[in-house]
Image 1: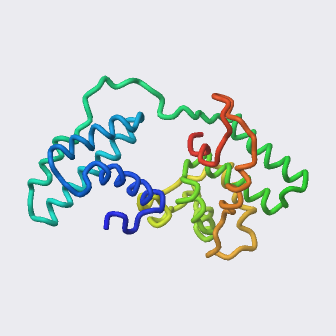
Image 2: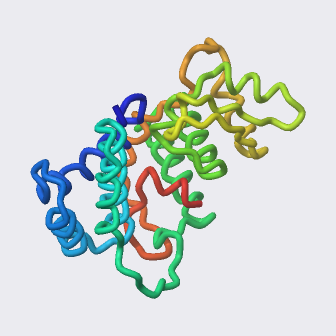
Image 3: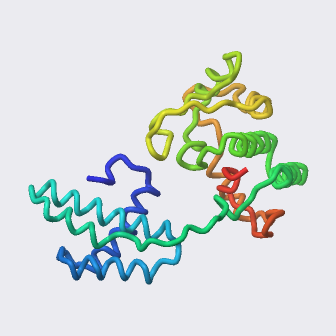
Length: 234
């Protein structure tokens, strides 16, 4: 029930959270199984976010049992699923810092592929628009960017200050929101819309993502290879 209507990645996360819960309890809710679950999670995962997600899933499951069985005692076992208190270390939101130069390197690689005949003019313009839109808006590649239509952008470009209306089914958490379009994005998007139907998807996102696997562009900070989702961190 909890997975109904969620994006595929969210469903996968829920399934991964459910595995350690079942491994520790085998369907038995008791003080010992809850303690075993907590201890297993603390040992298995190094990342605090991963620990939190599994234990939050377990607590949500206990609340569900309380409601479906009309027995509030299930919820009381959440007491044994608390994370230990620790001093919070200061850290960056992400270690993968994406700079203006990184985005320029991606655009340069796309231009190089076009000049070498690896991609045609249509793909070149489309990929360029994907990079600029992704970098300036921070939208998710598959959940959102791949779902946007020509009609949505045409409507946005008709306004004095272009703002894209992202619909609930085009967002991972099903939240409709407005996405302002930077002038560079507007300039890149305009030629991509020409001669296309309003109901068509704007971006060749899957094609772009597949080609991205074979690029060898490293982040200036850290040196690791740039991946498609890094555009969100610009």
